Image 1: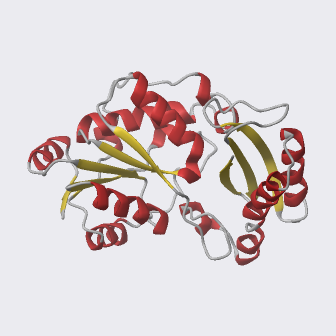
Image 2: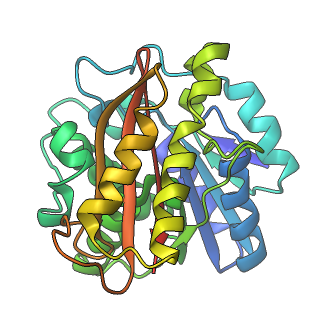
Length: 278
């Protein structure tokens, strides 16, 4: 496995790779969810490139950029075990050199849900991912369903800007008790960690109601909200029942696939989760 930092080093390493190339972008502090993306890329592609970069432009001033968990040596060991060919670890100065002023913005589907609560977040995401696509030139790029809106926004960007690649969205990987794997789970104390299982219980409760015939989006949102409110340590930010493609809230009865999602605080830690129901 080759580890590179400079852009020219990456380009030189990229020329040596066998096609097809799969890209797995990460912010590091890897867990089984990240490694499932690597495994999918390894299965589909002749070569795999992973990136590790904590992207400052997707964090607002009050968010956790400085405290975001990092362990590069551990991450590199895990990626080598998974058979990754090249790891790119750029610095902020490489990604955003002095005088940087170019941004990529996806409009409509960036506005609701996470976009409404984290202004500027998706502009940072789409800009850095566009730069990763340009630098690595993959044929496939792998993202997780846990960040459902992010995946939808990146798919839209890749389509709109004619990137010659396919965005692959892989299933959410969960702990045995249902909690979606996330680097931010490490912030939780033992009581908050136990309380956080309410997210998946809320999603499953709404899914069960739908399976039994409930079709009204307002009722499904109420079921999720009421389930979360049973947990004293949970502070709900939002629940959503939205169209999978538009991410706009559904006000009447659901038809076809819909995205159930939520954001909840446990202490200072903000967690998101979602499922798609049909």
